Amino acid sequence: MDTAFNKYLQKILKSEAFASSSKTRDLFTYLIECTSKGIPPKETQIAAEVFKRDLSENDQDSTIVRVNVHNLRKKLKYYYLTEGKNDDVQFEIPSGRYQVEIIRNNQKGKQRIKIQNLIKPLALLVYFILISVCIISSFFIFRTKEKAGSAILTHSKIWKGFFEEDKKTMLVIGDYFFFTEKNSDFQQELMVRDISINSSEGFDTILYRNPTFSQKYKPANYTYLGYSTPFALKELMPLFDNPDFEICLMSQFDVKYLLHYNIIFIGLYKTMGIFRHYFKQSHYEIDFVKNSINIKDSLNSNIDVLTQEGQPEGLHDDYAMVAKFPGFNGGRIMLICSFHDSGIMECAKELADPASVQKIENFVEAKYGQVPGNYEILFKVVGVNRNDLNSKLIHVYKTDSTAVFLNIR
Image (cartoon, rainbow, N blue to C red):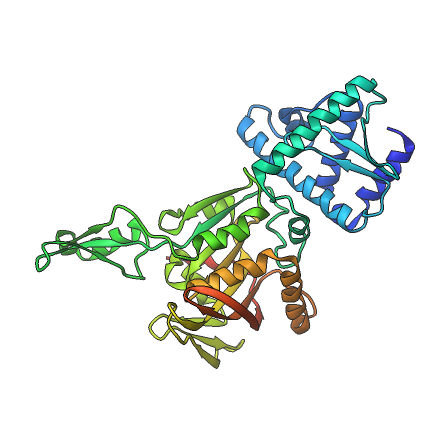
């Protein structure tokens, strides 16, 4: 590769976005070398030569390659939004390919250059046409997922850990588990909801303890999603690209997922299922009867009580929490939860907006001098008719780094 291009390559490798990850630097260097030789690298080759994975494990090899190349693309975008915004030369890895392209910025605009020497003018024209078609097609297929703000968010301190690991992220939706009751008065089955039961396994546990219940109750054939679910997903899903995330209902959540995924839970406090164990170590204690939050200090003494007021169908306030803490095998867990739909929708919007995330980070840094790896933040949200209007940050705590679920019985 030309020495002028190599200068920009070395600048990238030494930048903030790349300096902390030798794995990303090795991957980028390898793709550059393969492209300069005119040899399009295959996933199995990348898995073996960069990540030292057994070629026989094709599925796992493909996953780790796709995830890391996806993260590499995001780091490049972040670099060109920050340190490299004035670079005359830019490197790009088109979606769906592992070959690196060079783009030269000059007074005539952007000019794409193949790394492996020169190509014939006609071939260059065909190449530009194909790339343009791919870019336009990708724009309509994937909408606006690749907006610049997403690249900045993936490097934020609030989100740190969710876009840097080999793990996929699973969005877990807090759905409503119901069971049916045979009612002789109405001569039909009635739907019953108990917030302490939010899965078939939980229902089976109740039947095991009370065998006679099976004569009267049985699980419903389906669950219900809250009003806020599509609005929250609309905000958060653009941060991820297939196949980098999956979606699961809380009622279908298996604890083994904690071993293999980063987890983002989105739902009401009463739909949290196993994640309610988090409050055993939290500064926030949820009272499901009074719809209130008891705020505790480090000595576990109450220092304030916040009570949710108003009905979701009218003007009301809500108290929403965002908490981040360790999972298993190096994974991370984030909880986005509240009493009503308005709190979830507002938090999702705040976490998906770069300017709002910066305000959150400033709020946390004002108390601790930095954004800790594990935290819990409380928002007061004003809503009307199940929709959010605005929010205010009111509390933040640095939390223990111990995994929440180690002592589950």
